[in-house]
Length: 88
Figure 1 (cartoon, one colour):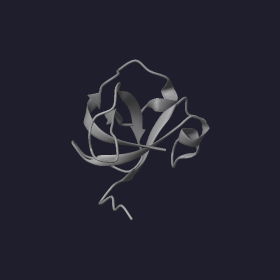
Figure 2 (cartoon, helix red, strand yellow):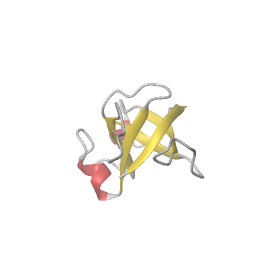
Figure 3 (spheres, one colour):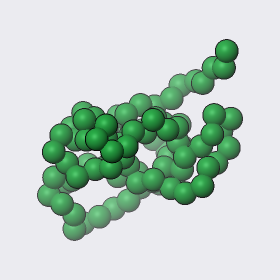
Figure 4 (cartoon, rainbow, N blue to C red):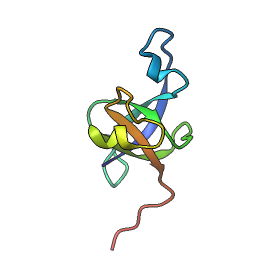
């Protein structure tokens, strides 16, 4: 799992039929202190995440196990919205 911040959306009118009705979001991976990591991820939103929210992202077969993604060709899925991060 990785932590990221929602930066935008992806609109695709021509896509695999199993992706119809799925919201695709652009996520910037971040470090625990909130600083940006390199790169971006396009992920299927399974929780209704909003712009600039911090989220939990899973990849690979875990993304396909997320709610509503069974048998979908996805590599990344947003599975949670982060309220707080506490260090011990």
